[in-house]
Length: 352
Image (tube, rainbow, N blue to C red; front, side, top):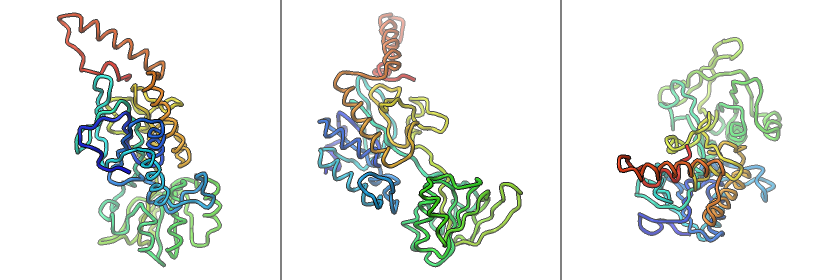
């Protein structure tokens, strides 16, 4: 495994932005295909799943596997195949002739192709008291902070898989876990719903909206509203864990490609975006089912698509048609002495 690869500016066949399951699997596959591969891990490798106490439903682990064990396994495997790693985050990508310039805080990296696997960030509740009490009872990591609230009452906000997984983790420590969900019923997998329903230490309160997190120096409770009746209430709790959705980490691409309605990156079935030589994988792309197993498949698919592109230039037909037309128009303008030339490389990469 190689960290701090070479000296910036570096050049690689493939640069992968993100180091969760999708990013690491992409790195493994790309390296095994013989492509010089760099994985930008961000501040730490593993992404969100690195803090998950147990990932269920991942092939090969019938009893589940902690994210903090699986993610290092994947990194070791990718490194053994020849992938290199840098603890930097992508800030933007710019077309440069037939390549991509990947900008980081530490310098630029040139890539013949890019795989975006930057994942998502847990959304906040955006209610009074939340930001002020972060680290004082407001958390989004049950495995990290759950032991701090042993034999006390804690609240989990949300009704999907993440909320239920974290509630089950917290129930190993807390005296009681109260799940607050704005909907009428929990929406995650039946596997988790059944476990929640059978757990004596977990109480589910449906149609409940959190309006404020209470407390001076630390969390003391929550103020809620009944979504049906409008009645207000207060719940005593020493901690609040919010799992109310994901915000894709795609903002750095917003000026280069049209994102979908929830800011995910549109791709085809081969994970190819509208930018020639750029794929997206994991829960930052629009077709993701947000499963750990699917993230691995998407990362591998993206790497195979990139390998084919580097071998013969094959890409999405709609994008290539647009590129050819832009190239034609650019050549016509460049042939006219009165016309200004387009920025180098922009016509040959951008599809939208």
